[in-house]
Length: 319
Image (cartoon, rainbow, N blue to C red; front, side, top):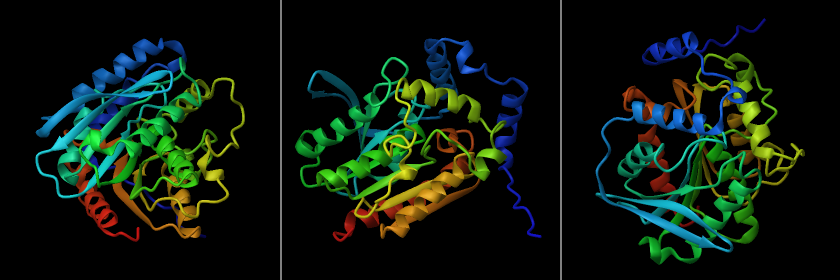
């Protein structure tokens, strides 16, 4: 009989988890979406530390068809790579904005020494699927065709997403392959890859680890609206039959995250299809750990590995 694998949360997270378990958040169905978004903002502001200094930070607007997409460009003090990272924030498709992830974007831009363009895609339930995905795709297409507007005329593009934003980045990488738009890399940070949530890690860490799966399932219903086909690869990228030719991937997972196993499985699918993949597992970490780097410095240790892999992918013309 095989011994059951034991996962140990980093001690620095115990006070955070204990507080969350003693005072669990209300079920999202019982509060307004405005209240949820404000609470998410308040938590993000409470967790973030000193902002990494930037050479510049600029508010941008991307005009596409019948709408405008807000974006924010971060230019680090020192740039050591000819790349632009297009970033999609997390928040279960319902919460999050440019401000909630500003601390993280600044820190990542500073540590990777790359420009970051954060995209303020539309959120559910006001804008159900595929509105957010359409924003992601249209923003990437625009940047690819207007690189000089972002100071990266001859630079390569990287797409990066966190949690729900990683779902958008995953699907975008597949669609961009089909459209012939080249990427240096796709970076998927603890991605959610479909609404079924039936893996072993989903069972083990379903409650009490900040990301409550019952809440995520509710948010998926908000995100999908009237769209009921969970087998559509735009909803569940794990069901994409052909991943060959998509951009090289860096997949970041947290050991104690209900979404860990599906991210590991997706990395395996990419590798099976011949896509170069680097899987970075952060031991003892929980979902959303990068956003807590100001209060748990160990949470940012994976960023050094991430920066190394990104620079290698950008510098390798064969990638």
